[in-house]
Length: 100
Image (spheres, rainbow, N blue to C red):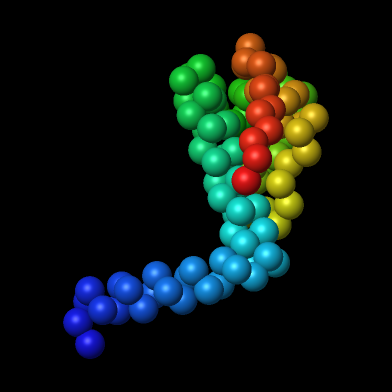
């Protein structure tokens, strides 16, 4: 089997898997966690803050910052916690709704 053919097979399989609402929801949760983690880390680094310094500014434990940035947690941080952390760096969290 050549690579091009294998790629097509994988695309078809992924397409079928995304028709399963539970599977799609789990994938999207993972994407959201990674996006939140990436944004927090970028903002923290832009402000030249260590995780410990950001944690102190946000009045949370350093492990909270590390857990969010790692995106390995099984739970997304609450919007209020994420907002608290982002706000401590002088940023405003804006939530945008879009229709699928």
